[in-house]
Length: 628
Image 1 (spheres, rainbow, N blue to C red):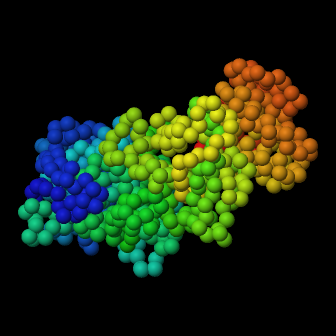
Image 2: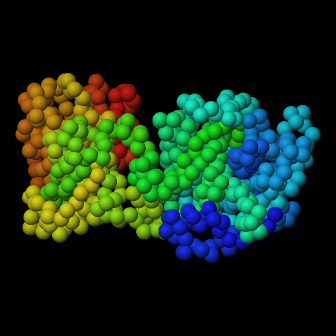
Image 3: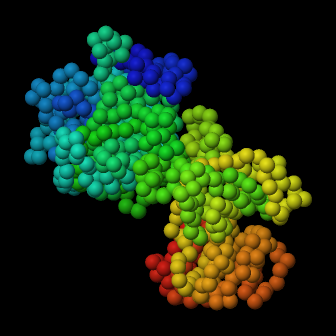
């Protein structure tokens, strides 16, 4: 079988829909017809397992896992640049097992012999794709009868984009005991995936994608049939399952090298296979089914704020426990890719979870500039459905979508100086810093260095608020409108009497400002110890003073402010000023019967949590919130 000599119709269709068909019309030449020497060495010397695409007797692609019997590196040999020989051990439920067995029985002919693989070194993010066909299979003598030598001829090879790989360090784990937990080769039309399978999908951070392109006799010479193998990575939970049918798996497409080989194969064949591995337990989930690529409005109807997705309607699946002879090294840390965007949820999930629909928008009405990079922005809620109320509890955050106002980012393959910009959807989350009045809310916001959204908002403030008007409420003339995506968070002021310790680092004061305002409007009883560490003590005290004046006398509040910066203020009845940082000795002054709420940078929060644990406050009494 020859290698490719151009983009096939499925690939050009996807490239054109995404708007860069012309830009990469000749880039197929980067796909070589054999391995380079460095890649031959890479596959034979660096990898403990290789995900491979194989085709079942029904013509469906599956992503199998090729590994040696002991999980060690070196199970692959490369006698020449056109050949890879894999000495593999398979297990019941592994798709590769069926293909190898059928080959020996003479039942693998034509497109069933197609194969592709992805060499991926997780510790370095290095990877190389290859494709071709099975040349021969030899059984090896073993008491298990599960060992084979698979010879593959390579006619396609290309380096691959590394930017979404989550790094891991592996050890061999030869003493596996594979056990099939679920195996359904052909699902009935109304069948759903089991809850355990759905949980494995929706907590995964890596998926291997099997695809195939089937040519016609008229196009076989220019566009020969071939298999494809790829990987997608993201934050845990980036893959979703439609709640309504419990079997449609939704995979967002992120900005890559624009070849669109996997999506092009899916566009052409309407088929795909997804495989997910738990690297901690060795469990492997194999899925196959009918697939389609959705771009633009059809995608947005399924996944909010993501305009390119792949939908796999599962028709067969297998879950094998304790199968992979490789495990993540105990105690090692997963390195998250800085390019991975935040998780996008499905429209169905959003409607079920957030209680907020597309009926709400937020318009910037006024602002108070506190410093060059700190301001309080006041938004008016615009609702098209007067019966749909927006509810924000003190301490919660609001999710705003500024895409219509700012516009989408330009395409860049890599952007190491600002990796998050690659898939920037202009959606941001901030803790609401005011007690929610019906129709209004405030955000106390800091401009982030290089931040697209905060940068655009502060540019508006700079045009509307000269330094002479800092500290005063100033109307904003420019139209700034965002969609309200939802309200989130359980870092909230509960009902009833209160006995709490609030711990804030810098702008982490925001949820506590909304809680103070809510207390000023009620008749609560209780005790609050509030410790704040800040580089801007004057600004932070100004934000709190007006709120403190309205706290009912039934609430006893004591504030300890720690700072290394000058402050023109003295201790008062409820405010004590301390020089420097919060030290271990301070935590010993805290009553251990309090519920604790901590908001601030990670290192700050970790230090506070450790100090509080040391005095005997249990984990279940400590509530933490990251920065929004």
